[in-house]
Length: 556
Ligand code: OOB
Image (cartoon, rainbow, N blue to C red; front, top):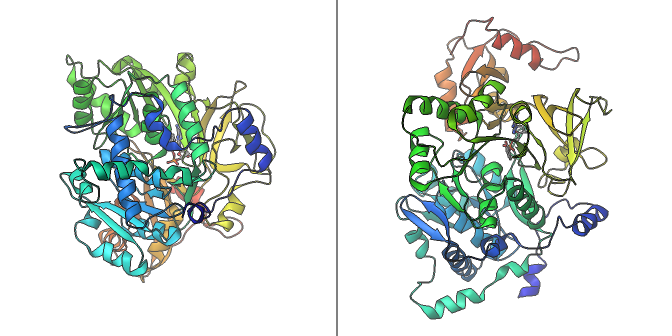
């Protein structure tokens, strides 16, 4: 049985042998499964997760996840399969994640804001054997979506957690704890041995710039290294109390250093439902949170709330605030230590791999004016012009990178991969950056056709393609418009023959197509023609300028 399971490996683009060997020799890859994170700090009694009124120790998390792995194995799930998981920021997110890692089933963790279009697209690509959702989400409030997916994927097992007592729901799948016989049996299952750490552990989600959302295979070795190194840079320890307020599945709160980094150091993850300031301030004060990670738009809300609190000191325990995911204005960066009384760390990362940090002992100037430098000495960064030539130090160019935790290819996407990587295997992130002489990066723009809406990424093409299926729309282009709160919002520039077409109709249309709410255009602009480039493509630069200069009468 063991043999046939290990032979079933999930497809991914491996690193070239010579590089892989050097990553091992230099100690970046240590061939440990990610599940080791739960026991690495060696204190099973310590609290790993606080979720509302519930607490889970490392021992419990380890045991619960082993039980779930065993229960799933009893249902026929095995290494080499994949799972589609969508859970909010609750302890079960990690419990399920570790159970699947132990079993060797590679999950994609969809964001809780995703709807059936996104989940359907992931299922289409992955052909998962398991679906885990939560009835708090409208997709799982009744059985329709699950039934629909099962019709397409007849071998799909489904597990939907109830809204209130999540773990109790899981217990129905798990052997009872009082049943020691079962306990022994389930702990015997240590399925992680089936998956070599050089193989895929799970899939990260790409922010995307194409029509369909892309999946990023992450191996145990590469992810474990990024987690270990990040935890080291951020000086995590058993005393760390980390507030997870961004969506738990996102690469930033998962591994930069995120919850996984905290687990590796034996600290505690305090789960927040959202970055909403009042909710977070209460959690910080109550649980003496020492560290948090936010996107810039949330920092703005925290600063505002903090000003209003005046004499209260809800953030007294907070030592470090990490900010990343989107452009962070220098003026706001300077306000973080001055007003929130904690240190700032800028983080520029991507689900595909490379993560840059300002270091804790960097000068204020560096911390306020750069997005940090690569976490690893083995990260190779090139800043190139449009002809692929290196630009001079400090000049603007496209960011290309490869390294021990930067992926080598999207899952089953050869055409996309041919465009995303150069001949040397460097991944082009689509970001325009400047690199100083000491390796620090500033993000100054992007060439990828993506809108960064407060850290949530929207692939223009995905929304455009959907709008083009509407009978009244002849042409469309989705562009970013500046927004004070979110940094950017989206504007759909539409050409239609139907003068009566209104934005609410179009938003409803997109919603009915199952598109996530954050991808619905914030504004619609009806035009008589789209500006074109010399070669006849839509000139998005010109369009963006037109929209942001508000030269046109707003129509939504
Ligand atoms: C993080 O990951 P993704 O995959 O959601 O988005 C990556 C993209 C980058 O290519 C860049 O365009 C943008 O988000 N970005 C930033 C930024 N951090 C990310 N743009 C400007 N300044 C920054 N500090 O967003 C992510 C993953 C791990 C850690 C942190 C962020």
